[in-house]
Length: 459
Image (cartoon, rainbow, N blue to C red; front, top):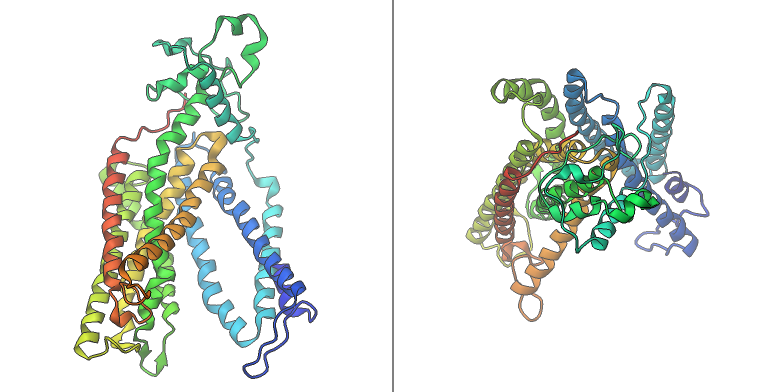
């Protein structure tokens, strides 16, 4: 943020002002400072996001029932705070940037980041720390290498013959041991003790012999993969809020009274929905659900994510219905060939934004809980990073689908199709129904995988 502030305030790094419609090009140095700031933010975000939620949850003791319940609430209020920040940045900060300049608009977030860093380090004496246990990727590779080396062996039916650390804790510092499971028995070969390893120091070489816990860590990652993969379709649908939902809004009547509403401003309804529903979910819905399900958190993580997937399908379906109504009105008024907004209020879009806010409460926060609770102790940050990876992969999938659909539905000159430049002459509703269909199929696959998912078992 400091680098971006410099690029927007210091004359040498700030591009020259535009004169009427003439805007001088930025110098290479100005480009360098600007993009350096952006890439530093991306790098910092990649380091903060997967770690901050795991670090916060680490402050709660899993062996204490009261703290376990509070840990579930932590993820809710953690996401609540993220959306409070998003609301302030998309309203107050944007207004300052538009009216007072980019320099002040970047300076305020920079100041708040300084306050946040100071606040974070001031709590150091109060934190509970989990000692680092080495690279989780190294541990995974060790199991794969050891399994390959012993590929011709037969894994024993008596799993007590497999190698495990003699202590109560895992060989990985601060991690708990995991019970053996009967799935993916081929990986058990990595924990088979050879006679030569009993006689030599080979028993201490993790690239030849792994513990049962280490093998189970890899099994957990493999079991989590189908659940993780279903989040990509959800993220692809979620990406429409900042892309095609806005395009749809620009072709609607954005006048409300004497005001003209920017199409992108309806994203605020999504953020406000999350802010309003988190307290309702945490304080009202969970206690009610707990009475019926008997679960500490009201719903299991898998149930919670499944509910969110269903709501996301409903949201995309609502967007398709709104687009069908918009296109029908465009045809009735003879506006199919006119690239002008159709006289249907943009407020019809509000339900689809609200529904996606509700879907976030269930699916996104459910993913936070699931990938933290079900991941091996030494891989919590890694698994949290994998859950965030679905967002980027979903955006790429959305772009890929748009490219394929445009190529398949357009004519040879690249005109027409489902999503042309003039949406009045296209069928954006077809694309929304395609996403809804994929979302429904994704939900069915998710239910199938969730029913067969085996929970992590700590020894």
